[in-house]
Image 1 (cartoon, rainbow, N blue to C red):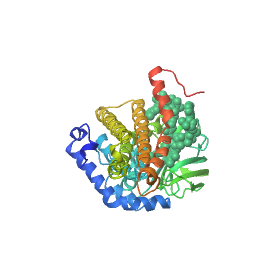
Image 2 (cartoon, protein in one colour):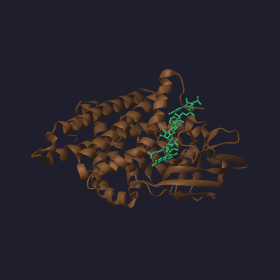
Image 3 (cartoon, protein in one colour):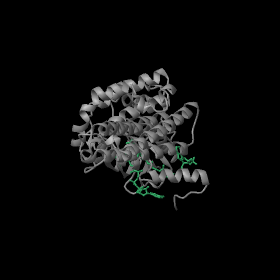
Image 4 (spheres, rainbow, N blue to C red):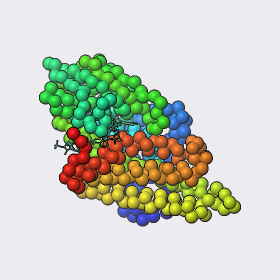
Length: 389
Ligand code: TGC
Ligand code: FAD
C-alpha cells in the first residue's frame, strides 16, 4: 500500500480497483524479483536480461494497447506500471519503454496485419527483444534531418547510414529503423537479427542508466525484404507519435524514482542525528522534504490528468511535452535534494538516491531534452518556432 505521506492529495481515490491492483502487482514484482538485482547490475553495467520475458509475461509491454496480446489497460494503469518500474531503476522502465510504446507501438500502429502477426507476439511476450532506432550521430534533437537512407532495389531495400544511443540495438531481434526513402520521406523499416550489412557496438563508460544497454549501429548496404517497410508510417509524424506514447510513460515513471528519493531522505533525516537532534528537526531540512512532497504531488496530479484525458480522446503532443518536461525536472530536483540530505553516504550506492540522480540525467536528455520540450510548448503558445533554421 502507498503510505499516507506519499498520497498527500488522496490520489488513491481517483484510481479504479483494477488500476490499484495492477500497480500493486507491479510493485510486488519489483520488490520480490528485481530489487536484489539492481545494485550488482548497476555496478556491472548490465541489464538482468532474464527479466525481459518475465516482464512480458506480466503484461508490461505497451499495456495501453489492445489486441496482438497487449493487455488493453487504461493509460493510467500503464503509467502506474512505469512508476513502479522506475521506483527501482530508470533502466528497468527504459527497457519497457523501448520494447513497448516505441517498438511495439510502431508495428502495432503502422504495420500490416501480416507484419503485426509476425513480430508482435514475440515482442509482447518478451521472448524477442525490440529496439527503436531514430537518433543518429549527427541528429539527436532534430531527427527530421536524419541521413540514413533506404533505397528500393527490386524486392529489397538497401539501408545505408548509422544510428546512435539506441537502447538494446546490439541484441534486438526486431529493430524498427527510421530512414528516408527514395522520395526523401521518413519511413519505418523492420531490420531483423542477422540482417546482412548491420553491425552494432554497445556504448561504454556511461555514468547514467548503467543498468541499460545502449548501442550505436551501422547499416552498410544492409539488405532487408521490401515487405519489411511499415506501410502506414509516413513522415516524421510517425516516429514522433511513438515518442508521445513513451513520454507519457516517462512522465509517470519518474514519479516512482522521485518517491523513492523522498522516502529514503525522509527515513534518513529522521534517524540521523547532528547537534543532538534528528536532522529532520532542522527547518532547512524540512523545507527540502516539503518541496519534494509538494512537487511529487503536483506531478502526480499532472500525470493523472494527462492519462485521464488520453483515455477520453486524443491530446496534443505539447500537452504530453509539458508533463515530460515538468515531471523529469521535478524528479531530478528531488534526487538532488535527497542526495544533499544524505550527506556523504548519499554518494554511495548503499542508498538508491545517487543512482536515481545519475539515471535521471539521461531521462532528462532522451525522448526530447528539457529545452526541446520548452521550445515545443513555446511554439504552441506563441505560434512562433524558436527551434532555429
Ligand atoms: P514538427 O514540424 O514539429 O513535426 C513534424 C510532424 O510531426 C507532427 N508531430 C507529432 N506527431 C505526433 N506526436 C508528436 N509528439 C508530434 N510532434 C510533432 C507534427 O504535427 C508534424 O505533422 P505534419 O503532418 O504536419 O507533418 O517537426 P520538427 O522537425 O519541427 O521537430 C519538432 C521536435 C523538435 C519537437 C521533434 O523533432 C522532437 O521531438 N525532437 C526530439 C527528438 C526525440 O525526442 N528523440 C527521441 C529518440 S527515441 C529515445 O530517446 C528513446 S529513449 C527511450 C527510453 O530508453 O526510455
Ligand atoms: P543534441 O540534440 O545535440 O542536444 C545537445 C544540447 O543542445 C541539448 O542541451 C539540447 O537541449 C540543446 N539543443 C538542441 N537543439 C536546440 C535548439 N533548437 N534550441 C536550444 N537548445 C537546443 N534515441 C533513439 O532513437 N532510440 C533509443 O532507444 C534511445 N535511447 C537512448 C538512451 C540513452 C541512455 C540516451 C542518453 C539517449 C537515447 N536516445 C535514443 C537518444 C536521445 O533521444 C537523444 O540523446 C536526445 O534526443 C538528444 O539528442 P543529442 O544527444 O544528440 O543532443
